[in-house]
Image 1 (cartoon, rainbow, N blue to C red):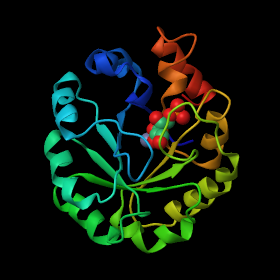
Image 2: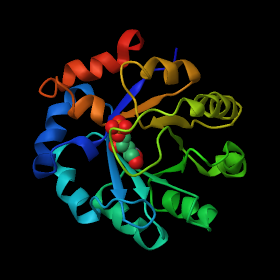
Image 3: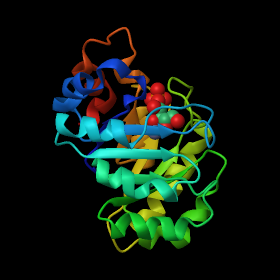
Length: 221
Ligand code: DX5
Ligand code: ZN
């Protein structure tokens, strides 16, 4: 079985205490998921590169930065300089995605491609040589705490097949509605990296992040 990685999404953390929230999940997490939203590509606004730069000193864990912004190209270098390790971009709304992915790698980050629930997997076939991570959205992007879209399970399975046939290592990440109930479904479908916000930071057990993450890993840890 592949190792399962957990990427807690800061979107559901306390925005006034992000550094401390990172410290609290750090012992149990593999990377930190940071959602950047612009109020244009998605109907919500979160944070930008200056905040990520300030958070960088709080942990050595990789910063898994999910850019839900359009246009994205003018900001790629800022996020890399701020300390992002993985930069994941959406092809929807960003027409020159091939060049965007090339740029991300040129400046030394891992390149991720994210697909909205309505975007077919076929779109990434020609992009696979350029990517280090494929992110399948299992909610419509914009907000934490939404219900998991199980219509996306087939896309995850199909992405696993594509990735296994590729000639280099690509992580398969799933984002949206991940809970102790849905985590086993996406792991069985082929996910390597589970993003979770609500299930870690915003539960009745919100003080015990270690417990919440262990519940996501279940028998797969
Ligand atoms: C949604 C974001 C997700 C979000 C997931 O657009 O990309 O990363 O934080 O939140 P949960 O885990 O609560 O569905
Ligand atoms: Zn995300």
